[in-house]
Length: 117
Image (cartoon, rainbow, N blue to C red; front, side, top):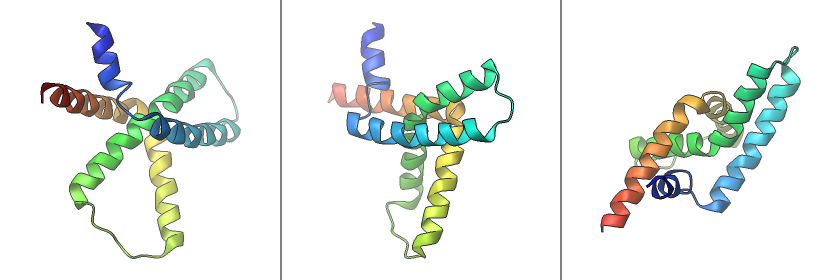
């Protein structure tokens, strides 16, 4: 019973998507570690869970943005895009414990719907 749920949620992202965003999250974790003066077990647990939940958090963010914008493209300064992307990556990483469950729920519902059809 639990195995299909795990496959539909945590196994719902493609491996290349997951590992690509896992690399980004490791980079953000390193930045976080070097920015903290006193490191405790709570901060270690926070960074550990955020690192592995970041791909699901980013998926939830991108899915909601794609839904809201309808995949419309914007023509703006490339430097501004990089700053915005870094800010959203940092936001998704730091709030991964709260955003990732929405992404996991979306993946579960999506893959459950696919299994029915």
